[in-house]
Structures are given as structure tokens and as C-alpha cells.
Amino acid sequence: MQDSILAALDYLSALHPVTLFLLFLAENILIAAISILLGFMLDGLLTTFKDEITLKEIGWTCSTIFFNTLVTLAGYKLFQHGVIIFHLNFSVTELLADFLLLIVAMDFMMYVFHWAIHKLHALYRYHDLHHQYNNPTAVSLFVLHPVEVLGFGGLWLCLLTAIDFSIYAIILYLMFNVAMGIIGHLRKEFIPASVKNHTFFQWLANTGFHVDHHQYQQYNFGFYTKVWDRIFGTLK
Image 1: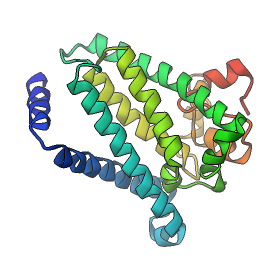
Image 2: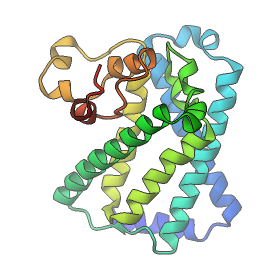
Image 3: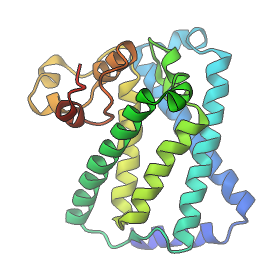
Image 4: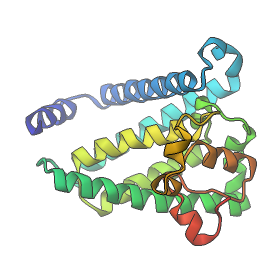
């Protein structure tokens, strides 16, 4: 596995910057397309797909993909210059420890950032775009102002700069992040009530948790868990 990753990194390092950007652009387009299609499938909206998406949403989704690509490219360049360092040796213990640390750290930083953009008028005017959709779909996940995209991307790059993580934990976290984004922008809960009501899942963000945030904007600022909302009294 390590040899495959090293080979992939060597391949990327040999690419022209424009080719590298286009490759990362294709990656982000694929991620967005899979996320949207999967979200619509889970909501049972595939047959009404065209009726649920507006040209405005498509435009903002394209914008988000573009700026996510810039964040991806910036992260790779920081890695090339040794500012971001990944651990390449595979260890299950290190993978799980780093994965949990990534979830906790990003959940806290995004909670603070999300809370701030709601409380500070100068920032909320950018975030208000996302809240124009009180009945979100998977497309709403990508309806973000560039300032917000770069804000969340900046938090991610700062964390990777501050701490050296296992590259396998990072890959797992990125998959988890997309999954939680989809779950937070569904119209119906797909997790069985018997599972959802378990004590463990009461601490995790679910579909209803983020949908409530779209309805009641002063609550539920977390992304992956309800921990910070419970601690700071913003849980609905």
C-alpha cells in the first residue's frame, strides 16, 4: 500500500501545474457528482432530479467545486514544500488515533467557524446563501459562497500544517466528511429509529440535526457530533 501511495505522489510531482489543477478539478467534480446522486437516491428523488435542482444551485455548485480544487492544490503544494507532512507507514493504531483526532479537531474548529459566521454580520452575509434553502437536498451541500469554502478549507490546511497525520487516516476522514455532508442534507432520516435512538448515536449529528439548523439558525452548529452544541448550549 505504501508503495502505491509513493508511486502516486511521484506521478503527481511530475505533472505540469495546469495538468495538476485539472486532475484535482476532475477529482472534485467526481466527488460532488457521487455525493449529489447518492443523496438524491437516499431521498428517493432520482425520478424528480430535474425538478429539484435550479440553475442557481448548479452555478454555486460549480463555484464550490472550483474553490475546493484550489484548496486541494494549495494542500498539495504545501506538502511538496514540506509544510504539510504525512505519515506513510501503515499502522491500525495510528490510523484510528489520527482519524479520531481529525474528527474531534475539525468538528470543534468548524463549530466555532460556523457559530462565528452566524453571529458576525460581516460574515453572515456570505453564509446566508446556504440558508436560502430551508428544505435542503444533497445539492445544498455545495451551495456555498467562496468565502465560506475557503474558510473551511483554510481550517483544514491549518490543521494539517500543525499536526503530522497518517495519510491513511486523512483518506478515511475525507470519505467520512463527504458521508456526513450527505447525511446532513437529506430530507428524510434513513437510519432506523432503533439505531438512531441508541445512546451512542445521540452524540452524533444526523439528518434531523442539520435540517433543524436550517429551520432554527441559532442552534445546531456542529458538523459531525452534538458534543460542542451540548457544551456551549446551542443544541436544539
